[in-house]
Structure formats: C-alpha cells, structure tokens
Image 1 (tube, rainbow, N blue to C red):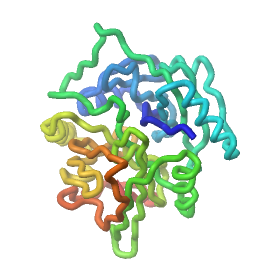
Image 2 (image 1 turned 180 degrees about the vertical axis):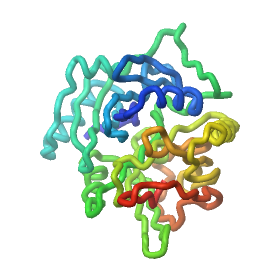
Image 3 (image 1 turned 135 degrees about the vertical axis):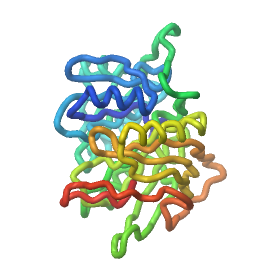
Image 4 (image 1 turned 30 degrees about the vertical axis):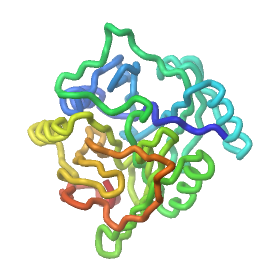
Length: 308
C-alpha cells in the first residue's frame, strides 16, 4: 500500500476572517493567498496555499490534506482504503480548484473532520515568491509538509482513533507520552509520522472537549523567529497557553498560544526528522523536559484542555 508523503494543507472553519487575517500575517508571519467574503487562503512557501479558512461557526478544524507525490501512489492508496471498507468521496472540480490540487478524495475521521488525500498541489510564479511581513527566516515545509496537528479523540474514542490512524490510514508511530497532568488526570498521547519523517504530522489524545483541534504547529528556520513571535503575541494581548519550553520526544523549542478561534497554535524551532533505519519507539512520561509553564486560560465549564 502506498504511503502518505506529508501533511500538505489544513482547513479551518472560522467565525471571524478579519481577525484571522491580522493574526496570521502580523503574528504568525504568513501571507494571504486569496481572500473573498467567505473564505481565505494562507501561504507559507511556494505553494499557493497551506491553510484554507472558511467562514462558519465551527471555529475548529474541518480538513487535513494529505499529499502524495504521484497520481499512481494516490490511486493505489485510495484503492487500499476502499479494500478496508472506508467510505470515500471524490473532491469536486470546484473543491480541487479552491485547494489548488489536481485530484483528491476524502473520508471522515472518527472524530468528525475530513481527511483529504491528494496529489499535484499548485505552486506560484517566481514573481510571487513567499514574503512575510515579520519573519527573519522562513517556515520549515518542503517535503515535510505544513507542520503537525493534534486533534482530540472524543471520550471513549481514543483506541478507535489510534487504530484508524495506525491501521487504516497507515501512519507510522513515532512514540508515546503518558503523563499525569493533574491529580487523577492521565493524558495518553500517540504521535504519528509520514514517510518523509517529520517527527509527527498528527498526534492524538483522548480528552473531554468541545473542540476537536487542540493545536496546530508550524516550524521556523530561525530560532529567533520563535522569540520574536512570542513578543508579538504578548504585545498583542494574545493568551499564552504554554510559555517557551522544550519537548523531549520531538526536541522542539516552542511556545503555545490561542488563535482567534479558541484552539491553540504551537510556534516551534528545531524539531527532528526521523530516520527509519535508526529509530526506536519509546514512551515518555512528561510533555516537556523544561519550560512550557502552563498559564490558566478561562474556558467554558464543559471544556478542559489537558494537553497543548
């Protein structure tokens, strides 16, 4: 069975496109690709878009776009999913055009958002190269993809979600983290990578929450850009969820803060790329080996954020 190359794009449903435009360009350092009354795309590199935003009340993830390097690999992978009984839908010509891809299919995640599988992402002309208003360097993308996402599994749905990612979508397990984050509250997170080796392109943990997406991560080429973004976020009054710190499993130096939609983002530097010939799956017992001090952010009484 063919394998996914990388996380090519991510789609969000957001209630306030104007706030997202300012946030994405002035804080994160992305560039608007296209904007109309009900949607917007964001660029991080030579791709026409890496994030697409559609205006709706969800304020949550609506799609993860998984890239294949050829049409043959895409069709082989899709045939394998059908053999497993996965219900697939072909993306329409309009959907493909809006995502700047040649061909795509989609299926539902056990937790309610779409996984889209595609090949042939469009790139911009040389005169339209990526330009950030605020970054010193650029984003780490290329064959490693956008970065990563951490969608929660609904309460009681953790085992099914891990099985779906591992045995149906065929992500490779990177490692595990098992930590008691509060007295009596154990978080069990599983991290998965694709064939190009970014430590994880998707991870999941079971948690009671109203939002599927806990956070997305983008990685920077220059460590200074993490610190500069932290200062921009603080100065803009954006809630900092986890202060600057370091993860033991992917060795990422980062901080976490809140997006205009209420889920979080991680801004990081230094994450590792897995070499399958020299990799051992391990279990860690702490989310961070230094820093990442947790700040208490008010959330609705029905919602908890045990993991960021």
